[in-house]
Image 1 (tube, rainbow, N blue to C red):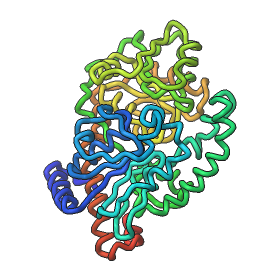
Image 2 (spheres, helix red, strand yellow):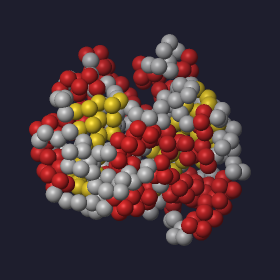
Image 3 (cartoon, one colour):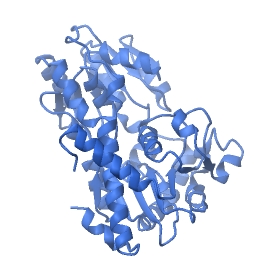
Length: 402
């Protein structure tokens, strides 16, 4: 539980950090190739554990924060294979073997941050393994059709995907039993962990660097563009945002890149602007000068809505997944049906309402980096005390999950 006054919260966090600092700690992350949402969570863990070693499948130097880069990073043997760092997805069938190859026997505490295979790291029986899970492997569970359905991938991927997915699902389920405590980044992911892994988990929403965003002081003009901030991959719903905005003559600005970019550019009209990934300063400006953020897909959590709110801009989002945990009626419009008609109706409702930038900013502060750090330190401290008090037996952690 978060302390209600700032001084109490800071004192509790400092006490927890002091307790954890006596442990030998390793961090395990899927891969280090850019500063996306998962890496921002990892950055806070790197701050909590400044001397922790970091294990990952591949690491492209210079692509993550200085705090992450500054520590000892151990890569798997995939990094030494031909084009291993640049085309590591070629070697997806070998991810489980690679993550299991790390020797983590020297550590008291292993914290994995996982959306793919990091949670499958093998630890000693007397090592506490806590996994902060962004999602069970989405391309082999819930979103398999979006990645490997007709028209979504080449013939080679479609022909090998069924066998690979079957193998991954078996390994993913079995390797979940290696984790002593799961932390989920949203209630939506908590439910998916329960479904696919049959494990309970604690919810700790991921951090947003709210202080990096300054709020607009007034509502945007009616001719300001709507904004999408997203990787351009199949399940992100960017195609729907393009269609709906084009049908109503609304301007749309898209920040992000990905394998779907060529197809999306081909279908987009003159009212759509593709910006690729922007610098932090340019992204802040994009939020402030937008009319609202559109998130037309189900996201496990999604940091973009919080960044928009921190910039004083409302959100129009599909009311499933993490968006339903962030966007209140005072902060934007949620819609239920993942259809063009559903999004169009939500935009029309949004355009009939007004929003207070200051209220949006206050909501965003509930998901700050400081709040995440406090919750994470508290959860890890309680987990370690429970684990140690029972002689390292995993059942000691059952009482930590409501």
